[in-house]
Image 1 (cartoon, rainbow, N blue to C red):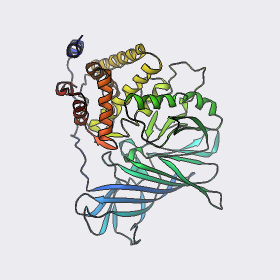
Image 2: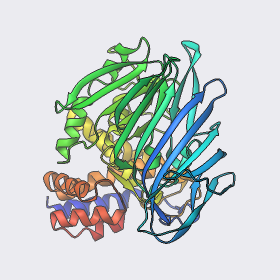
Image 3: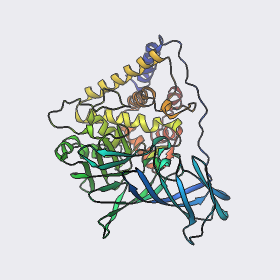
Length: 473
């Protein structure tokens, strides 16, 4: 069967299959364009300590930025932060600012241009309502776990920050905690120092740029386990509640193989300095792919006696996804989502559809091609059932939505998108397909992307005209 006939067959099949799905409608909402920016953050450093019992954060943020045009003020998202002082780092001169519930507007001492780079220092405190979570340790109620989750702008509840996905920057976290807590964050642990009172300060630095929602801090009385390093050089660790090292070793046992497989399959080696996985009791969501640090609910932990399709209690994954699939999905984001990030949520499928399809590719690699085909069929059926029952249908790239839950829809953004990516693979053939995606990754690494970037990269790599395909979906 020629590739063009195969593609025609796919389109006819879907057209026939979807024909009974009458009375379909597009979801409605405000149009979401790329957010305008007046400055570019270059580097972000936060120095943090906590009052655990009061669930309170004491912070000092140093924001280094360059204006994109002439500016006289800087606005940062700051949701109910108690800002005490703002100053310029180079001279410690106090700066004027005003606050609303959701932002701080800082008046600059002089007009700045795109020839200037400067750092603003913000001292503040807060009791986060979201984005950072304090949960008592069920095994020792005197202790807490702290975890973070930043999608949909939640990090502004504990950081004064630019609050969208279309700015990437390096980050540093200096976090001070009492014993026996340890702190895990993005990047490399630069220094660990202990004060006379027994408190430790953990200094983590992420040098490659990433968007604010991928910033992470995890605090707890964790035990650390080590997996075989990927390619012999990339450290892979897991952090679990005390007494759970055996379960962690079993749950995350295939991570090294996964990381090496995705690197080789897409001709693009895992770019981050390390990969940590953390199991936290009562984590805010099922799992989250912070750069180089994935947070999981502790229910991800299991033993060899757990069934193959073991599934933790999750609130935004389908029941058919196994613990192994979730681990591969979050790791997959380190190529599609973290290395390349959608420019706004209208293009979220470039993050989530890819991670969902790579989850299926891992099933193909680790189980069989039949398992991949079963995954695709299951996703397709769930999507069709959703359209039948809800009478809602939309393209993968969609700009009209009222809230993030609409665009994070499982059936459209995760499942339909994964099936569409599988169709594209069958149209192009394996080697052209994976080589083109490797080219796409390299061309746009550490930047923001839109759907046209993917289309153009594949066309440049393969010589194919794919306007007709992207226009369909």
